[in-house]
Amino acid sequence: EDAFHYNLLGARLNKAHRFSSARKVLDRAVQCDSSYAYAYFNLGWAYFNMDNIEAALRNYNQGLAINPIDFNSVRITSDIYREQDRTDEAESLLRKTLEYRPGQTEIILALEAVLYSSGKVDEAIGLLKSRLADNADPGKIEGRLAANLFKAGRTDEAMEHYKHLITQ
Image (cartoon, rainbow, N blue to C red; front, side, top):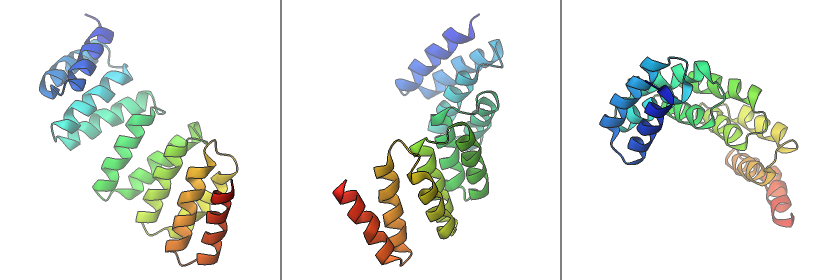
């Protein structure tokens, strides 16, 4: 029995939207090798698509305990937390991930969204400002920063960032 091949088959079944079958195969994968993070991630995806959110979270968290920097799993897990109004857990997960991937635009934007939706508008703006200079995709960061400044009533500051985006 080989966890790698069970995981591969489970991933293919997920891709084919055969989530119940994928779950059964991926259960075998984690039985074969309980340290195989990607099997937990794929199992989480199967459960998520079968609307078993708690089982999905359990498997994503198990996989993230083994491999804490898997971008897709972090993003999906933080999205689930946000939907459940568990913003503190989403924030914690995203901050931890930024320690491993400090320039990851999508993680920065996901954390900004969590902060903003939690009412931490100034903190969200501060995060974007601090990440603007050291990011590989400053246009996305600056665009979100300008939008947040505008929504926060800081129109003059927002306009400066919009102008900078246009003239780049």
